[in-house]
Image (cartoon, rainbow, N blue to C red; front, side, top):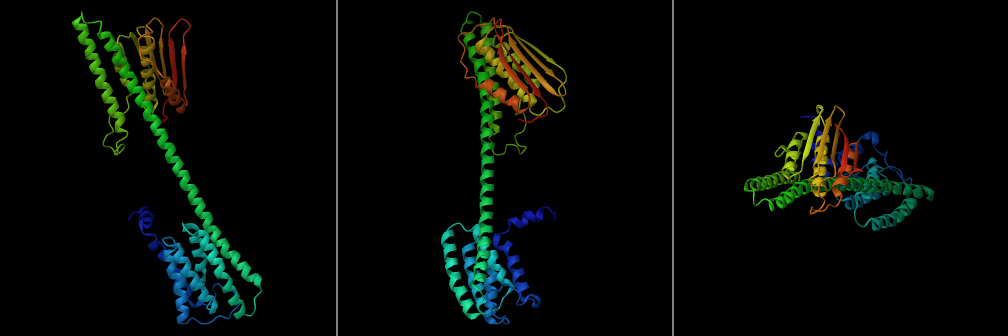
Length: 387
């Protein structure tokens, strides 16, 4: 069996089974002659040999430890009774150590009646201390107070473990919630990029089709472009919805989820069919491993061309993508000669989302208006990072 699987199999066992070795070890050690009479002792009573009642005290202190995490209150009650029998009869068993273990377990795992349990134990300790003081040689009261403080410390250690475990659970919950929020935000950005670009192109193409009724050939080409854009939108949306599938990342749906930079030419052609003159230049050789940089570069071009169709339709547009081993540089600009009316409005979310994506990868992003008209979008995206 693989050694790494042993801890995993152990943690799959019920907690009572995992606590059984501790109870058995303490029981066995208490029966060994070397430890006979060397256990916990308060009150100064003389040590007596183990008899039938001592066996009961031994069992009450050791065996309930298998319940210390499943039923901590029952475990503490039984161990306390066994400890009282042990001390009042002078057995002084090593099993008396179980009281401290039971107190720590109760402080750590007890969910209800915590204050009531503390008050009940404190109240029960008083008559036990009085009886031990009367039966014994008259130990000073300070001894009983000191032992009570040690018991309180054992409970306090358990309570500290409980608070630490709760804090860790809350931290993990916050981390998981932050991861879910980040994933929702990422999918929202992807949906914004895909839907906005394709729908804007379809709106522009549909508006142009109204003026082509006298030219059937051009009308047919425009309507075909609308259909192609719609199919591409459906394909991209399906890829995004695959991210939400339960088997995402298991190898069942891994192909074609993220558009590579190689699809930039297809993106440019789609924009050209919408009536936008676009000059596309791609330089350099892509790095062997780009991480998320290729997808972010694709989204920068996609969002920039969407804004061109919205706000500067018909203007001369240039797209420059440069690759090297360390980064991808993208520049999309217009000369400001296009129409600025009749296009769907924007919320600015697309550019803000692009800036966030590029910043995550340690790059630079900017979108500015040119003095002579038009605008330019520039992005420098380091390769190899995952956004």
